[in-house]
Image 1 (cartoon, rainbow, N blue to C red):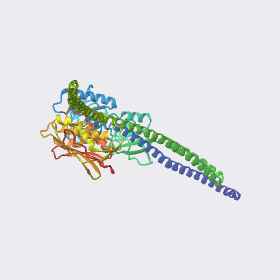
Image 2: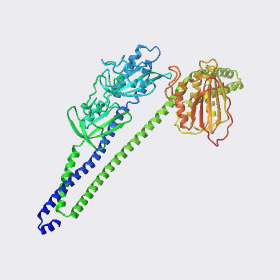
Image 3: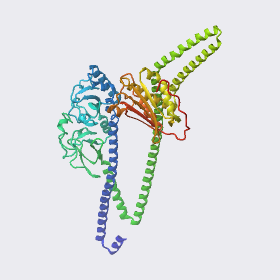
Image 4: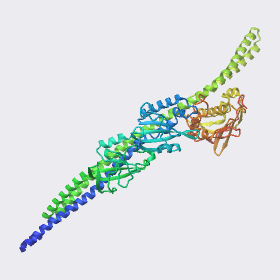
Length: 620
């Protein structure tokens, strides 16, 4: 409209100025569009790069985390602990070397080795190799100093023996409350670098001293990230990089800023433009760098500029209203497409997450079922082991009634032959009493040996204790142990007769073992109700518990008994049974001079009163 008005007046120079103004306007719009496109695309690329950084961090955590348990676990094995035993035999070193070799191969660790308190290697998984760690000192390494002070160590360094870099995890070896050595696992992170290189991404992991430790580009490794970073290669005494010289030329000239493109050196002479994102790895004390390629961003910016120029030309040729409507429809259509795509992507993610959750729930259920079965088997095994200890006494006890039966039978035959039937009938009655006594002994063994399904119900602890004491009468008598009882008429609670018999049997067996070497051999069993709990205590006059034993008393496979006299499962199983029924099992010092184990279970209300049973045979 304006141009036509100008032409109607015959003012051609004005039309030229309008054309120039339109061209300048299109150029300005194109420039503005490219700037806006770049400012829009770079944050999106920045967000994508940060997502990749999260993946890198998770990969590092997973690669190291799957070995985190190994040093502490190895420190508890018999082969490793034998290295630190007083007067350890030379064969213990060979056994430890072979155990570490097999474990390293099974776990996929680069190396496993054990250091003594001075930092000298006693045993190693690579003992067969020329670069064996055995006999070498690593007291200068931070992972050794951390572990020898009772902490777990973590450190990345180039091996001074092998020249191969790796991540080291260490844990102390304890003996009698003291750190006597250190177990170390070396993890090779080179497979992660290979994976990064294969994906074509530019990734670098930077240590706290500013030097690149891991990188997808080999030229980046052992190079400074920024000029301000120290090039000393860490503390010299730690020999973190061994004989490797740290390259002086940095990867970046300036610190990275969000959504800002900067120059990145790909090697000594070649550089490229990239969007650099840096994130912290708190578990390692490192930083990870991701240099995103901006080639696609530049291509999209150019395409955006061309599209804008064309749109400007159309805007100059067409009415402003039509162009605005078209752009509005285009923007709406793009928004709908983007929304639809994002909905589909989110739906797929939620469905995948739901499938994973269902699989995890199923796997957890299977694991819990296996755990319950294993625990029940351990309970039955421990029960049968305790039963075996009482069989010697039963054998002696059974011989007496069997001999009496033979005598009664001979007497009955003589009396019948002489016609003295009255006296013969009296002898037969005595034989029946003896048979009842044998049946009672058999019932005690069957009651203890039966398998229990773990369900609970109303029980009374007093008859359980009395039955168990009668069952163990022979062990107390053979060991010349005086047994005292102070039990109430009833201790009602909820649980399983068989499992409570197992707990009482374990506590009494431990008391017998505790007083075995004492001059004063006494065991006292007490029962009472206190604070809503039925409390059963077993005292002994043994040597008591030291600090280490008291702290680890209820751990599986921990025992203070001599080798071959116990697996260390009795107290652990008893403690678990008490927890299953809402109770506790605790140990402390006893007034008798030894230890007392106190079993506490919630009191069951409304239990009918019962008369106290007869005293235990042979036990007072």
